Length: 191
Image 1 (cartoon, one colour):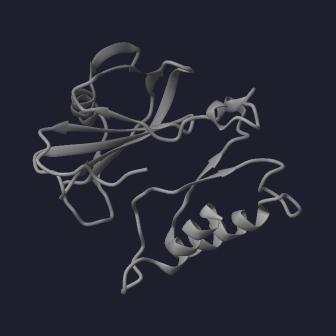
Image 2 (cartoon, helix red, strand yellow):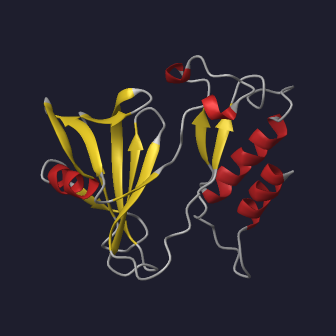
């Protein structure tokens, strides 16, 4: 019932102007025998998620059955791969790039990778919200070892002065949201 209600709100939009909600970021998990094919018990929710995507570009999708998630326990969601995380921008991260191993802050990683990859402006029109499409970058994950990164996103939050929010999508489906700077307000609403 909750998933259906969230998808219906996504389809209808929020507020009197029926705007597309981007937070919280909805992630629909697709799984064989659960919602992937007609006859699966939650196939109706998968179809509703597709309708929402067609109208609003949300939710995002996670394929629980992908090969990198082998051995998960279908009855235990804690064994599925992680789709989001959050650390401070000054926290230390271990990653590999161009054959070298780096142990430095996320903030420094953004700066270093910006020297190699073109910063592009996000569609939202805020010139401070940028992303890098990266290649050859692997971030260390304590569960899976080094995993490839496809894109790193940096958002300047209008709700937090002097805070930079950065979102890194990892190749294995995991992602990390982190911030740097001094917060003088609330953090962005993120699931």
